[in-house]
Length: 219
Image (cartoon, rainbow, N blue to C red):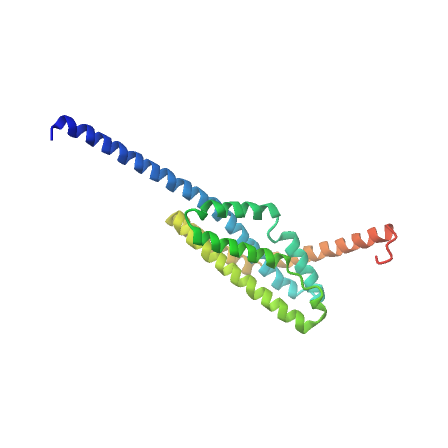
């Protein structure tokens, strides 16, 4: 074949190859950005779960009965766990962003988010009046929450590795540091417990005062 035809063909091929490489690189970078945003949200949710678990154990040592404990557990869950609610909506959007590339991981994360949302809404106020019933329900709830936390951590590790090896190492170190920090900072947890219980007492007093002011006989 004449060289005057070969070199133009080579040029076309090289141009196509460079365009394909550039397009692939851009797609890869877009995927990494989506994974990075999702990871940041998942790590925050994981922190919420571990703090709730650590705080709950501290509360058990500072209450006189299960009814009292359930009030403070439910208060903390409503006030601090998976809040503000808009974060969950943003988390769903972030999960959707990776669903086209990682459908199975996306599905698993959605199931975990739904499970954690149900854990947040769980209330055992009525059951807390019966110690045996309450302990069984609470134990099942805590086991489910712990399994969800472990699955969430597993999902974080998988996505971190898909992002980059450097990110994977950084997140592993952060997760390990987070666990050590929670289990080793008893003073913080006791202070958090005391402040939370004080807030509950104040809320009860305010509600009672409002009831008296409105003439509500139930107050």
